[in-house]
Image (cartoon, rainbow, N blue to C red; front, side, top):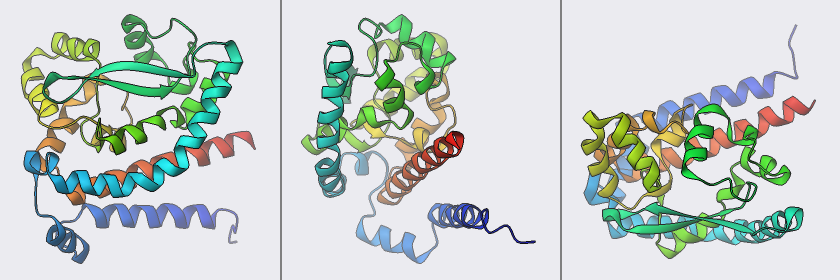
Length: 252
């Protein structure tokens, strides 16, 4: 007997798998067309005007949609407990230069200490973090807290896609725990402008575990290209859609 309820879900998963496999191939018509548009790879691509222009075009309409939402949620965050609307965190940018990353505040006041961040990252999923406010719990579940960063991409402060930006305490933590591979990773990190989306966040189930990021980050530094960026954007969107789907199912 055919289960008509399950058919759409199964069809979606099959379609997503086929698209995923197609985008991974380098000998398809699409891959060849993308290479024809931009054949740059690696560090040359990461620092190219083409990448900057591509991200500007992609991000402009996204900013128009997300910034009003970010402003409304920022006001809601302030109304909940009287604290700030947004959270600013200094991270390490290209060539070691500092860059301020902006998020909608999702945590209680005083919860952003480095020691707390490292401890809670390894123990809790973002939406289950006990440091969250009530609103923050819902916002972090869908990564909406990062909406203000699309404006930072538009301004050129960070990349849309690259190696994920990290604060200094995370870099020090990686150096302490993975000294044998740190130099290779940090060289790859500094060669480009750290980004909002990354290969690791698109593919890894342990995207919050900073000791697991070496392989993905170094691989991106070597293989960076227009085609890879399109794949990362697709996989990130798919991951968030699936999370929304899981949350909806959980409420039934």
